Amino acid sequence: MALDLIEAVRAAGIVGAGGAGFPTHVKIAAQVDTVIANGAECDPLLQCDQRLMESRASDIVRGVQLVMEASGADHGILALKEEYQGATAALQQAIRAAERRSDLSLLLMESRYPAGDEFVLVYEATGRIVPEAGLPLHVGCLVQNVQTLFNIARAAEGTAVTHRLLTVAGAVARPATLWVPVGTAIQEVLDWAGGVQPPQWSDRTADDFAVVVGGPMMGRLAKDLDEPVTKTTSGLLILPHDNAVVRSLSRSRRSWIRRGMSTCDQCRDCTDLCPRYLLGHDLKPHEVMRAINYGLERPADKVTAAVLCSECRLCEAYACPLGLSPMAYYVSLKEELQAQGWVNEVHERTDLEAHPMREYRLVPTRRLIARLGLTAWEHQLCPLDKADYRPTRVTIPLAQHIGAAAKPLVSVGDQVAVGDLIAQIPAGKLGANVHASIAGRVSQVSETAIQIVGE
Image 1 (tube, rainbow, N blue to C red):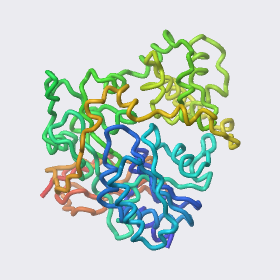
Image 2 (spheres, rainbow, N blue to C red):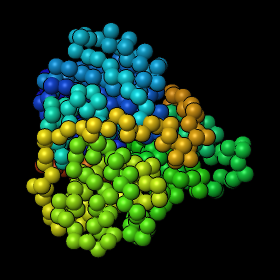
Image 3 (cartoon, one colour):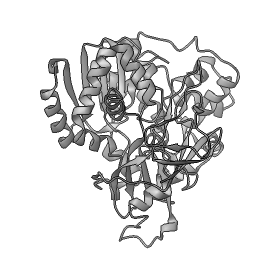
Image 4 (cartoon, rainbow, N blue to C red):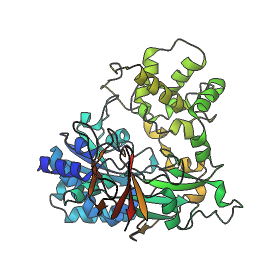
């Protein structure tokens, strides 16, 4: 059964839907005792996981059970925010209707950031602490996003990943959660949502807004509106150019570091609120900034601790009272270490204990929303839209995942149907298959993408 599921997931081209995009068939091959469904959806404004749990709870529960069977786990935990009342009710009903329901439980969490981080979620669900530079499987846990689990349940029935459920929120005419064919241009998705619509209290025009791909914390600015939706696109947020999120994401890393070198006052707020530090990891951003800013000899263990950073952006967007970015230092150091071929043999501690003040330093999502300048959209509803939107063309990237790009199997002029395999994992490489998301004719094939024109 385990090998059958792993092959079905591999064939379906499933990758982590939470954002990382790690090929799922590799992840579920691990042997663990606990499977955790991640429905925490901690990035503000996003609602796609919430709407999926409300509408397809039985598929998610089935996905959990399938992964439990494949991994040998005897316990499944479905974790979500306690404020998601509709999703909670749907999951409770799905669990009652499931076989072996005694193996499943719900974890209702307070709305805090970053509750959806794997390390944080494992601790909240089991009390176990993932080792430094480790993985949840090192403490017997396997964490999967709820949309990934939904895709796993469908893969067991022979259905490949062709669509992505995402949230369109912010300054948009019709906020919604949409099923979007992979490869659809961002502009076309915005058009489906009615286009940019400045708030009534604003005198801005549509040109005064930017598009954030993903959430306001872990997302990025869209390069252009022709950019395609991928398997990991969780949302499109339309925010003013002068919003704190857009300003932060617009600033170059060099600018962040230059500001930090001239301004940091060593208050250590970045360290005291760091989620990894609060779990006992030896990650102290203020010490790295001190060593670099004041020209001190770089302590090797402080510098290489960059590999422990989850890049949650909490230090940059919330903790620092001066608006600096310790994370920018860590990202630069990671690249520097990688270029040097550095191998981690330092940060592997397993004897970890959570900080005694951890419970008092967790950041409520509401406060984070206020700090990000998103209060105007805090209670915006983005209901599930079940319409079958079909773009006129899609441009499907061959690298939507960690690992090697998929290799095309089609040529210009070929006719394809929804779900047809159009690119596959290179032999002996880590990767994910790619499938047609609309029916039509292949119009372009390159080393990076396949374009299909609809029928």
